[in-house]
Structure formats: C-alpha cells, structure tokens
Amino acid sequence: MKEVRVRYAPSPTGDPHIGNIRSAIFNWLFAKNKKGKFLIRIEDTDQARLVENGIQKQKDSLKWFGLDWDEIYIQSERLKIYSKYAQQLLEDGSAYRCFATQEELDKLREKQKKSGRITRYDSRYRNYDPKLSKERSKAEPYVIRFKSPQKGITKCLDNIRGEIKFNNKEMDDFIIIKSDGYPTYHFANVIDDYLMNISHVMRAEEWLPSFPKHVNIYNSLNWEMPIFVHLPMILAPDKTKLSKRHGATSVEEFKQAGYLNSAMFNFLVLLGWALDDKTEFFTVEELIKVFDINKISKSPAIFNKEKLDWFNGRYILNSKYDDFAKEINNYFKQFLDIKKYKAIQNYNINDISIMIKERCKTLNDAIMLTEFLYQKPKFKSKYEIQIMCDNPEQCQTILTSSIESLNDIQEFTIENIESILKSLMTKLKVKPKNLLGTLRIIITNQKISPPIFNCLYILGKKESIKRIQFAIDYL
Image (cartoon, rainbow, N blue to C red; front, top):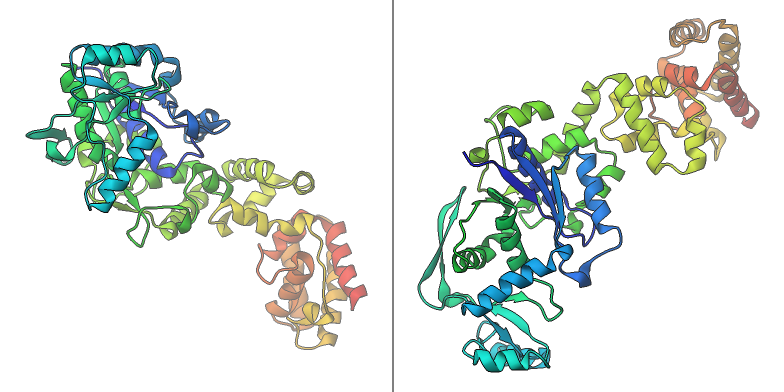
C-alpha cells in the first residue's frame, strides 16, 4: 500500500482561521492513524497579501493544538520548479502567454457586464503564434495561462461526494504563472502535491469549483492524481459562512477568550466527522485510533458557540486541579497586564485552582473570579455594604463579630473558617445571606464569587480582617 502523505497548506495572510485548523486536524489525525506523514506547505505565492509574522502565526497555532509535522516547505523558495513545469506546458501546447494589459481586461469585463454575460477572460491569445509570443515575451510583461478544454466534461472524483462532472464550456483559460513570475495557487498546488507524493488531498469544500482546474493540470502532465477529500463547510448558526460578525473565528481569538486547546481540538473534530451518533468526548490518542475519512460528512457543520462553551466547561471540570492551575497560570501570564499578574503571583495558584475550577467555563472566567486578589473593594455608598442585611445595625454587628471570630482562628484553614463563621451565624441568629453574603461583597466586591471561605483563606487572615475593617470605617 502506498504511504499516506497528507499536507496542510496555509497562506500566511493573517491569523489562522478555525476552519483551516479543522482541516489541519483532519489531515494530522489521518496521517497518525495510518502511520503516515503530515507535511506543512506554506503557500506564500500571493506576495501582496502576506502579513508580518504570518508564517510564525501558522506554526504557533499548530503547536498550540499539538499538531507536529514531519516536513515543511515554503512555496516562494520553489519558483524554479514551477517555472520548469510551466515551460513544459508551453512547449507541448497546454499553456500560452497572454499579453493582455489590466486596462484591456477591465474594459472586457465592463463590456461583458453591460451585455449580461459572465465576466471571464475571452482566450484572445489562446491561438497566438508561439514564435511571436516568445519574441514579445523578451520585451513585454505577460502571464501564462492554461489551455482549459473547451468541449465535453471534466470528471472529478471526490472521496465523499463520488464523481462530480463539470461542463468545460463554463471554464476559462486561467492564469498559472503571474507577471511577477510567481505561480497561482492552482498551479503550484498541483505541482507540489505531485512532487511531494501527497496521497490524499484533504481540503475545504470551498475548493470544489476549482477542482476541474486541478484535474486538467494533472491530465495535461500525465500525472497520477491523489485521492481528493473535500471537507464540509463550517457554517454559523444562521447557516451562513462563519465570519467575524458571528464572533471569534481565529485561533488567537479563541486562545484569548480562554478556551482549552484540548477542548477546541475535540470540538473541531466533531464539525464534519463522527464516530457514531453518541460518542462526543475523545482523547487525542483515542481519536488517532478511530479516525476514519470515510466517516467524514458531506453536509455542512454548524459552529455552535454554546456547545463549545459547554464542551470547554466539561473539560475544565474534568481536569485535575494541578493541570488546571498550570492552565490558568499560563493564561494569566499571557493575557493579564504585568501588574495584575504579579499581584496574582503573591497567592498560591493551586489554591486558586481549587477555588474557581467548578465555576469556570473558560479560562477568561478565571480573571473575573480572581479579580478580588488584585483589586481591593471600592464602595459607592453604605447601601452597597448593607444590601444583604435586614438593617444597618445587623450589618454592623456582623462585621465586628466577623473580625473577632476570624482573629480567634489559630490555624487559618478553609475548614476552620467555615466552621467558625457557621457558628457565628447560629450565635447571631442570622441567615447565610446576611453574614456570608455581606462578607462576599466586602471581600470581593461581587454578589457572585467563589466560595467565601476559600476567598478568605487565599487572602489570608491579615488581609481579610483589613478589608472588613475598611468596610466598618466606611460605614
């Protein structure tokens, strides 16, 4: 059996989109399942659209998901290869030079629009004398166009959809080498897939309209084609193409929003693939073992953010406290400003993990839940402090008695704090909301927070009493 060799071929033109990463994950899992090779090919031939650090962003995103690669190639370093095969197609009559200027093409397009025709190149240089063409190429700029078949149909075989037929009348003579000498995506893509011995091309469904172009290039070079697998589109809940107007779409945005790479990996695999109709949670090792390209759906996948939030929350809930502590520490280090991060470092990160893990759907929730550690309470009115009490006198009694009780604790543990404050409630004959609710506001400045016993413990006796005294002085 031929060795499985697959590739992920991103363009370094911006932050990696989750749709692209989903393609990378499918390719990677298939390669691992078949003990094959996973290649990275940076398709940077569109020089005008490149962004600074674009290649590094692609690598960083793959590393974040744990997608290691066996080989890496950069197309801009392979221009001589594309030129060689373009010359071969020129010589055998499968391609030709086109000297049409941009102004001429704009006029053609405008004329076609006015007459209600499809706007496309009119093949004006298709039958131009090759000798004259070669002579003009010495002094004039030109592009090289592929001679698409003008009659009949082009049959394309997709592993998911079966045979797809395209009417050749609807195809134009597309550019394979631009005037700057760089190849277009369509040409470089085919040349590289063949020379790199790619066995399966697994790419987004959006490339289906270009499928016949690639098949015709293969045919013109008499090359054996790989197996094509066009992955289903990822749509927003409104069934339109997922875009920024629907929220986060790039890997970096999801990282900043506090999603775990493990949860994202699992979630993205289920966008267009399923083992069965019930299993949702997988480890990466399990996915490698069971991944089968024949189980990829041809129906569009719906990106449901609520489902992702639930997924991420489950991953956090099921994680070990030590692992979650590492996650939040790394997240704070990356996305908190340096002053706040240093303040957090004054506390035990494992204790913080225990305090907030069950309340986090994302790592970003950890920022809000730990805000009280670096943001001391500020009150706008007395009512803010007294809101959980039946009357101002009760509030005053609770605060002064709480200081006395906390002062009496020799070993300041969560268990001892909980025990003494519950005893105090009984002694004062107040409800949990009166005493614990009031302390929660004073200590965290929030009506909803992690368990108040944990908050007091992490802050420590001295700081806890200091904050209660601050509220007493304010009153």
